Every structure is written in C-alpha cells, then in structure tokens.
Amino acid sequence: MTTGIPDFGAVAGLDIGSTRIKVVIYNGSSCITGMRDASWDPESVALDLLASTSRDAGLSVPPAVLATTGYGRRCLKIPALTFTEIATHAKGAFHLVPGCRFVVDIGGQDAKGIRLSADGRVEDFVMNDKCAAGTGRFLSTIGQALGVPVDCMDSYATGAEPHRINAMCTVFAESEVISLVNQGVDRSAIIAGLHASIARRTASMVASLHPEPPIIFTGGVSQNRDIARRLSQELGHPVIIPQDSVYAGAIGAALLAWEHRTEFQKKED
Image (cartoon, rainbow, N blue to C red; front, side, top):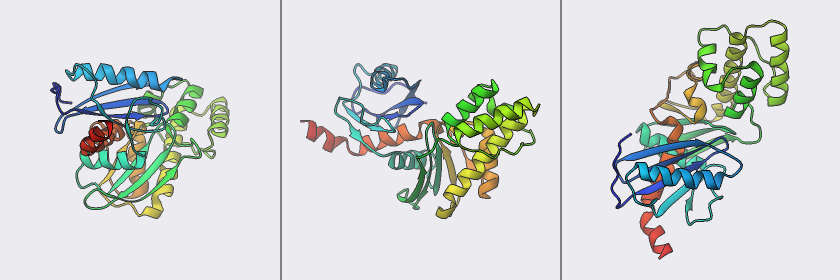
C-alpha cells in the first residue's frame, strides 16, 4: 500500500485478533499496514506493532487517535476508541469494494456473515463465536495433525476430490483425520474434504440473511482460495477476495477513528 504518511492528521486502527494482530495507519487517503502473530501478551505485541508501523509510515510517534477491534480490543491501557468486529469488517469491506452488499469473515476464532445496505450500513448479521469449527484455528489444528502448514493447505486441496469429513468439532475432526490418514486416505483428499465442509457450514450459517452479490470474503481464511471457490459454489454467487482482505477489520477501525477523531481529541483534551 502507499507509503509516506505525513505527521499531521494520521489515525490508527488495530485489529487485535486471537491469532494475528493487524494495524493500519491512515491519513484520510493513504494507508500503511502491519501484521504480527498474537501471543500471550497481546497488548505488548499490539503496541510494538503500532510503533514500528508508525515508523514505516514516516511518523515520529504513533497517532494520538486510535481505534481497536477484535477479541483483544479492550486490552490496551492507553486511550482508544473501541468498535465491534461487525462494525469494522463492514466498514473495511465496503471501503475495499464500494457497493458490496454482503461480507463473509472467517478469522482465527469465529465466522461472521454481515448484510449491508446500498450505502454500506449494517442491516443484519449472524456470528459463530461459540465453536472454533471452520475457523483459522481449526485449520491450523488439523494442519498440524496432517503435517501440512496452514498456509499450504490451499495448494494441497486445489483440484483434489474431497473425502467426506463428518465431524466439525475441532477435537473430533482431528481424531477423524488421524484415522483417515491411518487408513491410507490421501492428504489432499482429506484437506479438500475439510474445505468443502467449511464452505457448507459457512453457507448454511449465513443462509438466513439471503446473501446477494457483491459478496466479499475477509479474514485470514480468505487467503485460502480453495475454500473461497467452494464457498462461491455453495452460495451460488461469486465470492470476491479484495487485496488487503486480511486487514479489513483494521481498515474499518482506522476509518472509524478518522470519522470520530475530532470528538476523541476533544474528550482527551
């Protein structure tokens, strides 16, 4: 993305997720992004990432106006605006693809479907936050059982005939996968079956919202093109993966920080 943000008028958006932390520095027109793996101390990682990305943007100090989102959005001890993931992913997705009407977000710990109005407002949403099935953490756990890094699962599954996976609970699915490996089932077929199950589960979850295009796929799992392809088939509509889709939440937080910067500064004064 564009570099060289001037010292004046910049804000920051932090998406403090369960597996990765993302930051966006924004000045009304340009963005700088940064990302790191989460840890047992998300506040320290988030603040260090904020500082380093601010330097990358050419700022002498991090922006005074900051908005947070994600599971760890309330972990910072410094003043910050906080927004839900629904609000920030909707805002970020509409910024990345103006006119989008539906957002599917699959992150490290949950999955969401968000229906938007023609002008980008949230009309309705559904969220699976009680079970990690079908999320990035689910894929990572199964990948470890198969000896395949989660970032490589896409290439393994592309073109493979999926083997039916019955369990979607992370614990039971891992046991089922290990059993299939011991039976000699090819890993590519197993991974393709997992992807197909995730696509079916996600499409079923969002069906009540009647998704209509343009449909945007955000979150870390959006980088898995095989899941995106199978999700398109299940929904009956093309699924768009915009550039910087993994930063949608942080982008949305930065945009909301920009909109609320005046009242935030007055409050702090």
